[in-house]
Image 1 (spheres, rainbow, N blue to C red):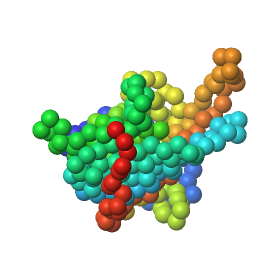
Image 2 (cartoon, rainbow, N blue to C red):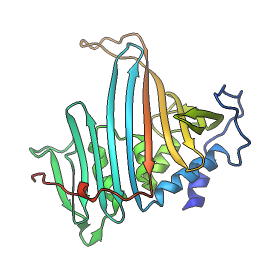
Image 3 (cartoon, rainbow, N blue to C red):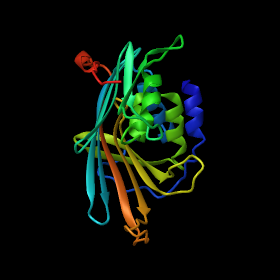
Length: 258
C-alpha cells in the first residue's frame, strides 16, 4: 500500500520554481514533498485510533466569514464519532460497533434526518473507514483534511490528484511548531483545470497535518442571478490530531430515531 501511494504522489508533477519566502530558514530536508505526504498519509491510514479537531474558517474578499468545527474520534475496528457544527446546525456520524447512524443524504427523500444501519451489512463487517465512506456525503463539509485524517485509501487518492503540483516552500513557525510548508496549484476535481492555490503545513517530527488552505477566485451571483465582481474565497483549516491517546468511549452512543 505504501508503494502504491508513493507512486501516486510521484505522478504529481513537481516543478522547480523560485523559493517562497518563509519565516524560518529551511533545513536540509531528507524527503521530497511527495515522500513526506506519503508518510503523513500512511500515519493516518494505519492508525488504530484517532482524536482530532478541524476548524474551518472561510473568508471572502467582500469581508464575509464563517466558522465550522469538526470533532473526530475513532477506534478500530468500528467505533466512530464525527460531529460537524456550524452555528446551530449539527451533523453526526456515530458508530457504537454494532449500529451506526449518519445524516440523510441530500438526494434521498424522507422525514428522518438520520439513517441507522447495522455495522455488519449482508454478512460483511464495516470498519471505521467504510462507515465514514457511507456517511460522509451528507456532512456539512467533506474536506481534504477530513479525508486524510480518516485514512480511507480511495479518498486519499482523490485528495492527491487535486494537487496539480507540489512545491517545497521551506518551513514556517506555526503555533510554536517548525512546520514543513508545501504549496502548489489546486483543482476541485482530478481532471479539472486549475482553480486556485493550496498550502499544507506538516509537523515533520510527528507527521501530523497541521494546516490546510485553499484560495480561489469566484464570481458570485446576486439574487437575480447577475454575476458580480470576482472575489477571493479562502478556506482555512486548522487541524489537531492524536493517534496515541485513548478515545472517549462515552461518545460512541446515539439515540436518534429511525
